[in-house]
Image (cartoon, rainbow, N blue to C red; front, side, top):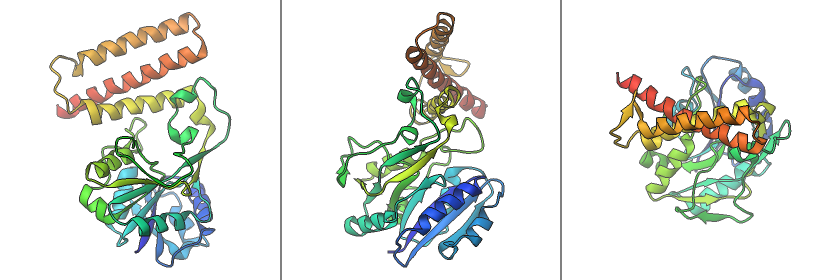
Length: 310
């Protein structure tokens, strides 16, 4: 079973060198390769791949269009591997990480996909009022200490920075949706791995949780600011418009936005104004701010779709 680790990277050669150093300390089966996919502007990643001590295992690829989903698809389509492990360039892994994934794949076989926990490696402490509104990648996640199949009804997603799947199952289900995922645009939608994993579930694949497949994920201090969290929740709104609301037939629209969404967004703006004028407690104010961000993202998603149709 040939295995490929795929790492998309965008303008972060220092982070790439860091994760390759972490991977260089792992124990590998002989047929494991590392595919680094630089996307967008060239920024030194090829040099890192060429000169790093683990370079013999690394295949450098370049995708000119900035976009995480596009980059991963680019690598998958050009690989002859049977099994893919997906990492990001801002993580660290334990020495048995690759072996944990390969062993699970050999035991369970096709028709299964895999993921593990995340421990945040944060630059600073997060304000308490923001914690409820942060993604798992910023606060950490674990499904327990035992390997197990997560029932389809309970499964949400494995981190895009830490999961694995057979190529045969990707060929059956389809690759990453390129309208989702991080791009060079600040308002790009999120959730590309979750959407793909839900398609795998719908196709009959089973999600296997591996407690030993744990990553440490770097969280910069900016991720614990109101501005970053607001922006993240805005992008969630854009994502939900694309994935949930856009396919629905809604009769009453105002400027291309369903009336009920626009009404809810305007009401939330009024609540936000009141919170600022009357000095609401931090926890309540953050709740109002992040709901405003999400609804604003829904509105933006609807308007952007109308403009594309025009």
